[in-house]
Length: 152
Image 1 (cartoon, rainbow, N blue to C red):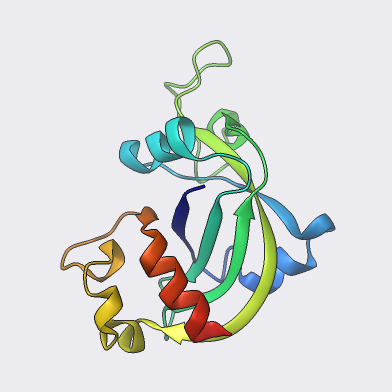
Image 2 (image 1 turned 30 degrees about the vertical axis):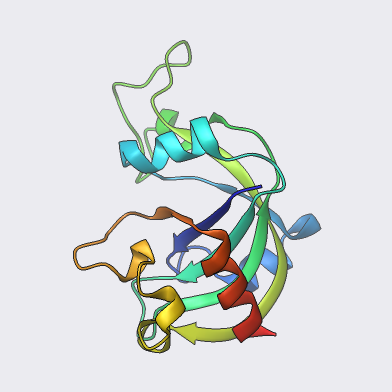
């Protein structure tokens, strides 16, 4: 089992939106970074743990827990010319971008970025590194355990 931090802008999909979705599950779409795409395509497996992170908002931080609920499949938004995520170079035969389904398991208290920075066990966490902008990053088992303990 692996663990991941996945960033979502709450104006697009918040933890409340995820928990209100049928079966608490939604497609993770719109990833347009090759490294994040490769994590989804090559490494994420159903059952992996997810820290659901609110980004690009007044108080960013971890807002809930989730699991990967599907294997990878082509992101439909790349084919939609009306989508903000449309990619004219993508074709049905050769899609460039991937989606996976994420299932919310728990809305938690918000664990703000500032609080995360104050926890020694998280000092090496990728989301806390200067210049880190990836929307999906791996989380170590020790980091996962520290965060889940804080949220309990």
